[in-house]
Image 1 (cartoon, helix red, strand yellow):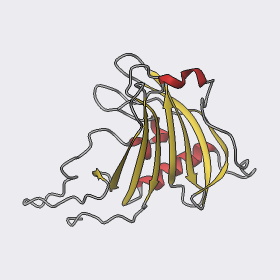
Image 2 (cartoon, helix red, strand yellow):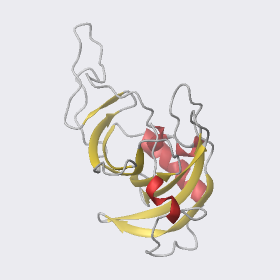
Image 3 (cartoon, helix red, strand yellow):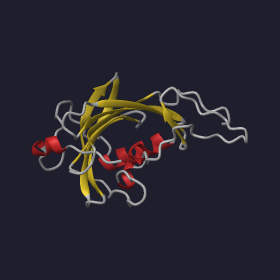
Image 4 (tube, one colour):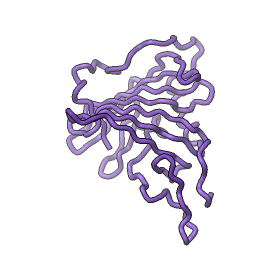
Length: 207
């Protein structure tokens, strides 16, 4: 799955193309951005469940924005929000009838190298230009705001993806992620993901 922003390529400058810049400067004793990202990956992988609501701006002119919500339960169950995986007669605990095929390493493995897209793609490069920009309040929580970029392959050739993330100061959970890229052949322009319901979703019966 690839994300595109052909309409705003003219707005993209060098590193973080279309993000605003308000909020408080981080304190002098703030952890390095690399440590914040690494600890955030660990915190996200330690969750038993959470919900991700993704708002997408399509790259095709005239196509309206759309929204999707998915529930993550552990590392193997990903369902449209509100559905519950059902135990099969053989006792197996599947991810449900609409198991998603794309890799969601975008929420769990950012420090290792971007977002892998699965075969035939090899996955993204490690983050570059990773920096801690500021702290900012989001939904009553104080968050580190970090930004970075990486390259990921495609059939047409590698392209750059830019991200900005809001990571809670106390828990290191990923609260929000904004993403744009310069892939001229993709189908989605800008994706904003808002994460919530941390460890608060019902688990499958077979767990």
